[in-house]
Image 1 (cartoon, rainbow, N blue to C red):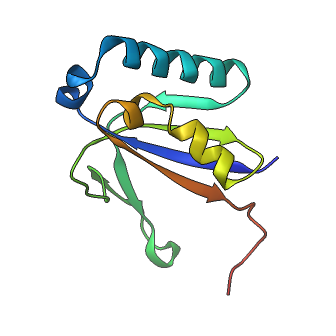
Image 2 (image 1 turned 30 degrees about the vertical axis):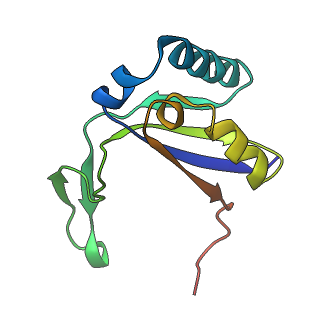
Image 3 (image 1 turned 90 degrees about the vertical axis):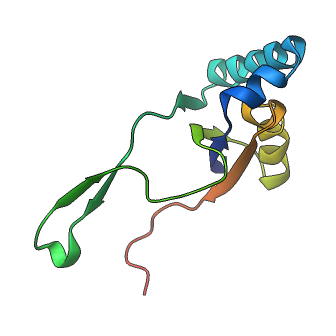
Length: 114
């Protein structure tokens, strides 16, 4: 089955403005997905890794991406197609609680891409 990466963006103020019943339903939807085998987690503190020309590893604290809202979490989900993945993402806490969720189709790695 196809896999998708989701990136949830949201902040505490948006979460707190959302009705508790809606938040609880979103958390229940995530819990069901985890029971079905999806992998989800809250975003920790990122680092950037560079190793240009495989010559020297450089690590910088902080995210490379920037957005209006902070990244709140990630998920690896399975769904039959993009529309189904969107329906899953639409029920997540970030989507429900005034945030946004990106859905990225995850194409299997197949070697060098020239």
